[in-house]
Image (tube, rainbow, N blue to C red; front, side, top):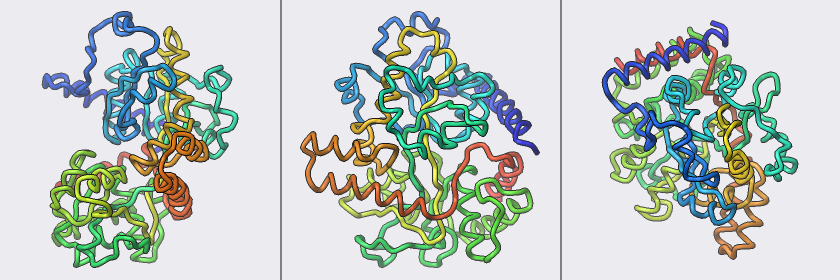
Length: 403
């Protein structure tokens, strides 16, 4: 199936899912926004407030820091990394009527940009003062541009996802940076029955394919966009592992990731790095670690995109101030310290930390984050939220869930 028709299919599915949710009387978005309020009332609080919606870990833990720095308040509603949910909320629910900035993984700009849902980024806007010094590999990446090079977003954060684990459970040194195999997730007898696997097909299928091609020595065409027969092979493998009792449970949300580790319900989990950091705040330093892997990573980037409606709002200058803030040292330093995420202009993060008297240990950790990203990004696999084979991948994933 061609990409265009897949995109249309995803949008249709998104609308269908939203209408089903509405018919059940459920609050599909769980937003603190009143969907039936006219826009004029929603913006009555003033132009210095910006409303964001997107992946929850793109948030600062305390947005008041940004308000003090640039004079703009953020009201942010977090969501997961399920592209179907995101498209449903943006397209079917018309979330752009009430939101100024969307933050999500690469791929949606290919659909929502040309469709007219996103507003092109004005790279000459006076508030976007850090644009010129931002490296091309970030600002001109496929995270924020479509295939034709149109600029639909501003780069926010990026990382290379793997899995969290308890070193003591595996007999490993907590300080070790040894590259571990994804076999610990999929078929290592030491972890059988002690693994949690993410329920989102777009996140978990590529990781399984990455491991399986290494195990068999037969590479797939693209682990992030598997051909139908390739997907069938990967799902057959996952079903075999599921029936062997490898997976203790499947999880869906960031909060579940933290809970499963904090409660020591599992020893290994394919998860987001911030979950490991949150757990270590509770259980102690290095109680859990985030793996360097032998086979590769789910490498991703988040972009900040503007709904087309934002172009007519009187807080557009404030919106661009926030976009510029995403490129600056304060946001970068706080995200690296609190989440382990990197992004463009890491040198500004180090400069910010020094200017604000961060400890030598924290500054060294920022520099370590930059080194970590460079090391992990040298490995295979780059993700996409909108693979051209999405229909067959999703259908085969249902076979795994039902097995």
